[in-house]
Image (cartoon, rainbow over all chains, first blue to last red; front, side, top):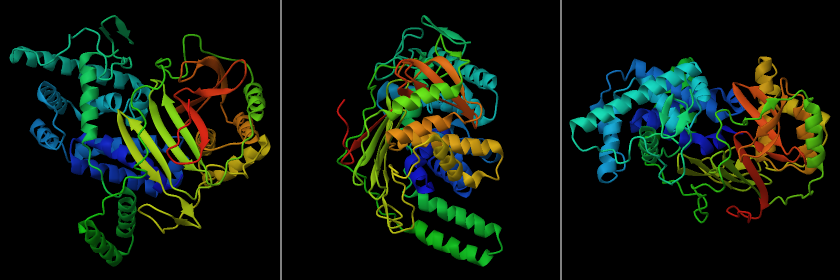
Length: 199
Length: 317
């Protein structure tokens, strides 16, 4: 595989991952670019990996976490909202819901957010997330389940604060994806409906 | 089944991904940035500033809008195209999966025998290898049209989180790209079908060894990694004639640490005999029919292949 065909194949997916991680167009482009520069300079090694895209994704994720440590530690939810202004608006309740969730996410630690993005956007297994972030699988599981618990709590709190719940489906009822197919089971220790999710 | 907040996260991230910027030319941008870094770290401070000025001049130049490759070709569906396979926590493993004591060469020899008996079709240089990769959830992960002789433009789709990415593989003729952002630039032809690929296990092992010779000075693990990765690529995204595929299966028996697992489960949920190996922290598994020894798929996906005449042709199913 040449570097060119790699970028043709995976470049945009990297930009998308970077954007979901950073919520900032400029940071996303910089982040993807820096991961690709790393890949370009080490192309012999990268192209020898079974999944060169996994290698570059790992570089990208770790650059994201270290950049955050260095430069973006002052980021606050309001800035996330600003970055999100460039997003496609979706109507009504769904928009308000997402906006609220975005604010909650911004309140999480960068590592926790990154775990959630890798799990629910990139559809990585906990083992692959662990390998990507250089942490153990049990840390991934613990981080994710703590983050989800925080989000659930905040969502409930927010609903209680503002009266009518913005959430439109019963909390413990069967939830299917937008396309009507069941979602992949995951591995945090929580019983939802009649499905025992891992642990 | 996931709970509400998890579904909301999926939806939110997918919506965010839709709004991601689309940088106009990542290849040129990356090359330029890499070159600048190299120059800056070297003694060529003057040259670096010239490059920087040139880069700035390019940066303000409005980039030409990138033409959509093969606009007449419809994107693959994002809905499932078959029933989901097993969604066990460890891909390839189901309730009955267990390590087997059988020698891996025995399993792969049977697989090679079956592969060698497949119909022997020789594709034309102007044709394309079509591949479709379907994941464990039954959704298309990727589609490709690779030029058989590597001189024609190919097309690819990647599907991630319901978002479809379309991209071209520029053809390479007489050492020059025939299209794309680097049109006219130097290239090496990468044909989907190589008539000169070995047809026996020994020669195939030699070929794989030679194709990873740039890793000879690396730790042994990197070399193994490179060989295993090349085998994976040959098996899934190259056209192999029956004898070539048989040679590939037999050569795989030499991967250090490769083992047999009985009642492995492929991405479509079919049970078979697996051969599995790990490298670079990843597990790979090929799964074969336990009766016919035909290759079924891998732990993570199934790949269908066909030879077609034009980019955009999809075999009837």
